[in-house]
Image (tube, rainbow, N blue to C red; front, side, top):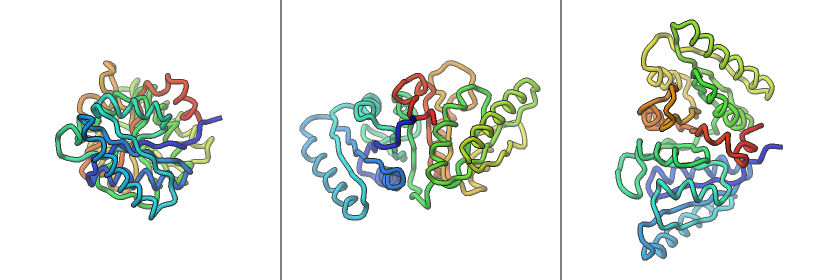
Length: 278
């Protein structure tokens, strides 16, 4: 039996982006009956009392408005090492993280966010300043050439089931016959899994060879997508669709569509694999 979505972690630096991530986490938590935990990373222990006071203020505000259990953690360390560690210690199923344009210890930006994600075994939902709407009802699932596609597929189907979502498979244009057939097989596999779970879906494809990320974001914008689901390929040393700086470009997209990111290593963890298996 699949492990339920019951524990979310939200790293916060008390900015608008972090507040937006909390908004998304609370909205999802209400649907799946999960608890949420706010995490603030401090540089030195002398900052602990002030950080806890600010967390307590946020928690009071949430509890006044929402029927959700909210906890807090103050951790001395750094965002790259400790967000993933705290998530695993708590047994978190998802990390909701805000990203914005200010650099620094407590500010998570583009490539910084990718590094944080890469250092965690727990999937992320990365948001900018776009508020949660009526759930993640339109989800874009980019289809690439690798077997890692099914890692994001499992979690995407799970999320779609909660929100009665429609999934839009969007595949890369490929001239090479072998690669084209590989994408077609992956797409057929995804469709079969969605049919098994009763998930409404459509299949679309890029019109030309070129910047697939740009084409995918344009497509997602056109359908007014609520979520894009990708696999993080950073530091893997293999050919994948989202290589190089693409992850940063996706999570920092100009139209601020939230992005759900799964690390391929997640599937090798027995604790997490039970969560994404159904």
